[in-house]
Length: 284
Image 1 (cartoon, helix red, strand yellow):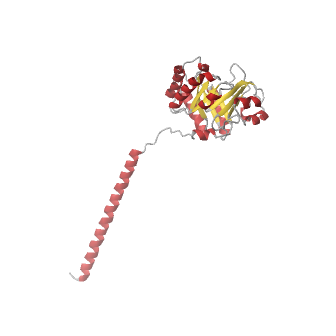
Image 2: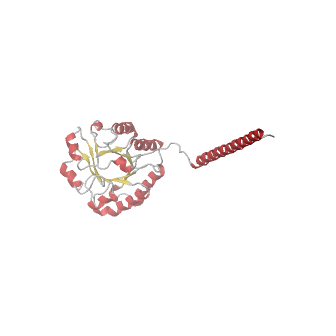
Image 3: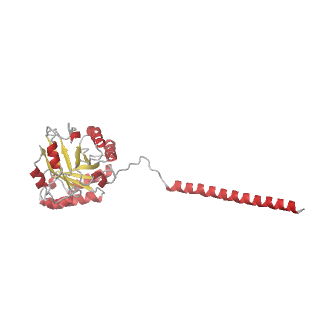
């Protein structure tokens, strides 16, 4: 064989070896890629019906004054949602009340309402009556809190204690039930004495309704009942729940935001002023 043929065969052999090497590398890369994909597929589980909410502090909007809404009837839900969506930067605290408390079983309708409200950016609490610390036992109140936790797990932001005593003598009662609620993950606790509260009790709660009555409270009442200016609205929010107010008073509201974190004002009257959407709600 002459030198020309030797060169030809050497070149051909080298080309075949190079091609084989490239093919092996390519196959190995493909195998590695598929293996990596398969491994990731087994590690990542994409949840169904995933719901994401902004964190609680974001939804509370710091010192901004917002709305408290007592949602005692699901018929009001579309209007509450529409209002929150129309005013996305206004904090909304919505208190659900399925049956003077959690009721005896879970409700898909109330579960859906909680999800929709939180998706819209509202803070949602569950109603628990406390009978001023004397008419219900700690076990009874904790049982209601536990029922919310069972019926609507990981859904509510907190608990709203109604019929809260304004007396300093019930501190231990409210400390115990507040601690129990927080132990279940309910980090936001609203208290409703409906009037002034003992200052010793203030640190137990995140929000305190210091007025619930017909007509608008005076500035002196707001200043006194909120211990102004000792508390920042981002630390302890005070609220007023006003019923039987026939007209919207913007002057009063502009004064009240100095003292209040949340307000609810309605033209509806006793005995049940919280069953109908207020006629002038979107104005305030």
